[in-house]
Structures are given as structure tokens and as C-alpha cells.
Image 1 (tube, rainbow, N blue to C red):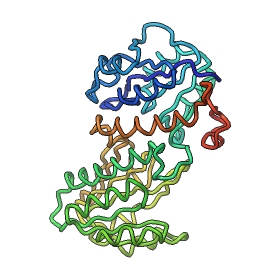
Image 2: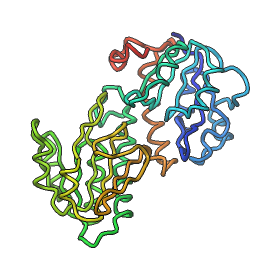
Image 3: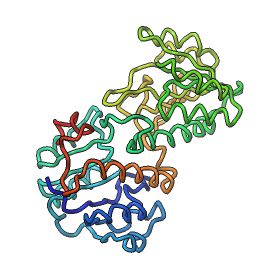
Length: 337
């Protein structure tokens, strides 16, 4: 399908201040001669004005008329139900939408609605990108999330035990959380699946353990006694996070411990974890699940997200302004495109 314009929608979820493209990104993409339309106030919470977008070459629009056909919609997060209903009434069947579209949630009725309208979807969660790939928005956001999750855990911990940090997962979120803990001179142990991370993390003063393929929870239990901060950040592309922490593991943690589940799908890696909620269980242990830590730093996060989008768009949109549906990155999305 030919792409006649790229459209940046204003995010609609509560507290979501990120924007999919910054004015600098608009300047770069405008050189490819594809018109870019930015919804009014889309960058307001990230401190980017409509005037900045206009100077960068974008056209500013409002949702009071049908959206032009053959549009490539760029967004950070899936919209609210009310906003989705409005957008769906204004969009044509010849629409491509890319962003964090929640394809792994238990309730994916929104995906079905978009598909029934003829939209092509590119969920960023499903793209097969290496963690250090400059196109990987999920990794970029995870890096910010890991750093902020560690700070959030320390803020919520009210116990009397010395702070001891355990992190499960060696993706960008887990590594960022571990590095942040060491910056604060906290003892930290990190669990991953690959031996190759050992030298990288141990040189930073982080204890590293490789989880076995079989019975990883049994292995973990040997190291959870009296831990006060536990962050789970274990998941793979296109898969729901594994359940790693349950009643048996809870009993090993210190009173008032804080568990942060960075696996934002329904249920996550921690039993009792609920999306965007804090749950308190026995012995005043807190289970915290925040699906959007990066939105707490909307300008920084928008810049990181936008840089990834520029790199990605320049690769999947061809020189003749068509979506390259046969691109290797999109081959696994046949049911969405």
C-alpha cells in the first residue's frame, strides 16, 4: 500500500505524556517528501509545541473531520476505548497503525475491531529486534523503565531490613535496574538465562546467576531469603511473561518487601500482580505493576521513542512511499498486516 501521509495522534491514556515523533524527527522524515500531520497538542506534555512541529514541516490537525485515506498512524500506546471509537469513525480501511498495541493482553478485542475495519497493524511488541538495535523502541522504553522501577521500589520500601536487591531478567529493563542499584551502592543480584552476561555485569559489582532451563523457580528460592527489593523483568519477544514468583517465594522475602513486576501483560511474572495497581499481601509485601514508567519522563522518553521510529520508518517504507510488507521485520506479522 502506498503511504500518502504519516499521522501522529495525541496519546489518550491517563498520564501519558509521550509523543510518537518529536519536531526534530519530523524534520528528518520530511526530507523523504511524505507529508506529516500532527494532532494539535500531541507534544504538549512532552514540552513540544504545535509551533515547533509546524516549523519542522508538519501540518497541525484536529479530529473534527475524516482522516485522509492511505495514512500511516504512528502512536506510542493503544488508545482508550472512547478515543478508539472516535478514531475508528474517522479512519478508512486503507490505514496502517504502528505503536505499542497490546497484542498479548488477555483481552485483544481491540485488535479484532481494527482488523474488521481493514486496518494493517504493526505492534512494536512483536518485532524481532535485538536489544541494541536503534529501531527497538521496546528496548529503549525498557531501559528507562528499569531505572525508574528501581527508584520506585526504594520509595515504597518501608521495612527495617537493609535494602537488598534481586532482579530477574537481563534485558534492557533488568540491566538498567541493576546498574541503577549499584550507582546507589546497594547489593544486587541478577538472574538471567545466558552465561554471556556474566563478565558485563560482574565488572560492575553485580552478582550474576544463570537460571536453569528446568525448575528456574526452585533455583531462585535459594537466593531470595531476606531480600527486600525484587524486580521481575523476564520476557521474550512475542510471548507472555513466565510466572516466577508466587506464594512459596513470597514467604522467603523480608517483611515490607517491594516486588515490582515489569511484565505488563495480564498477570505478569508475579502471582497477584494486577496491571497498573499496587497490591499488598501478607507481611505488608507490596506487588507493584506499572505499565508505563517511561511516561514519568515524557520528554526524555519521547526523544528515545521517536529516534527508534525514525530508524524503523526509514527501513519499512520504500523509496516509492510504500509499506514493505515483505520486509524481514514484518514477516512474522502476517495475521496483522
